[in-house]
Amino acid sequence: MRHRTTASHAPDAVIVGAGVVGAACAYYASRAGLAVTVVDRGPVAGGTTGAGEGNLLVSDKEAGPELDLALLSTRLWRELAEALPPEDAIEYELKGGLVVTSDETALTALRTFAKGQRDAGVEAYEIPAGEVHALEPHLAPGLAGAFHYPQDAQVQPARAAAALLRAAGTWAPSYGSARRSPPSSPTPTAPYGASAPRAATCTPRSSSTPPEPGADESPRSPAPTCP
Image 1 (cartoon, rainbow, N blue to C red):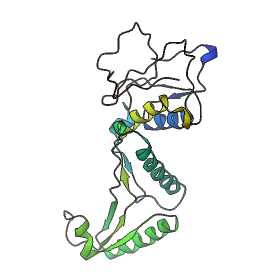
Image 2 (tube, rainbow, N blue to C red):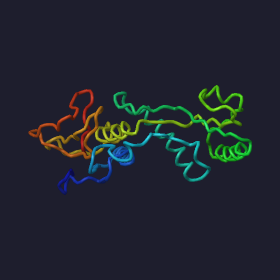
Image 3 (cartoon, rainbow, N blue to C red):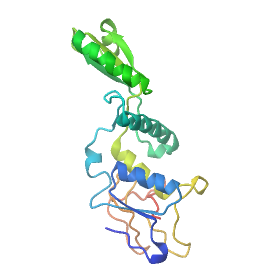
Image 4 (tube, one colour):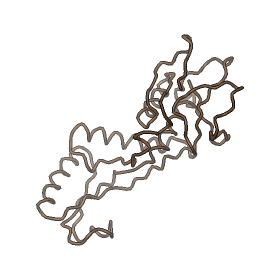
């Protein structure tokens, strides 16, 4: 489904894809004051996002542009976890990561790898062989050592995509809200809810159209308002 607007109410941006990338683009564009329409051929997080693990890792990236982006990403997700309302919790967990090695040659290489990461701003701590199992008791015996990365984290990607889309449509004016139609126009709503996101577009429906079966219309979990 697509949201067709008149010329006077055309969105500033049309985002194709209601996964976590499209949702994040919609969220930050909305914060910047843009009217945004999101379209997708399937449900929210119905593609790669729905099949992803939600890992936010710095431990597996060598120093360079990708690591710089990963460090920025970990900071932004931490801010989002604090900014989004409790009913839109994205299950952000600062779990930390442990990279282990079974021999001294690999451990030497890992030390060099971790030094480059630390120079780029990553927290990386060498764990002696005798202390590795205190962090993860189910590891195999005989390991040469490990490095602990406390910045590694995880979110629930489907919930994150739905929460960002919802926030993009209901952002408080004091924080730079997305523009909406004049009060005389019907208020469009997207047919998905907090606990069971279904639609992938901010497609308005008239007040005479019944809600889509299964959509959550409860006052605690309002569907996002389309720009």
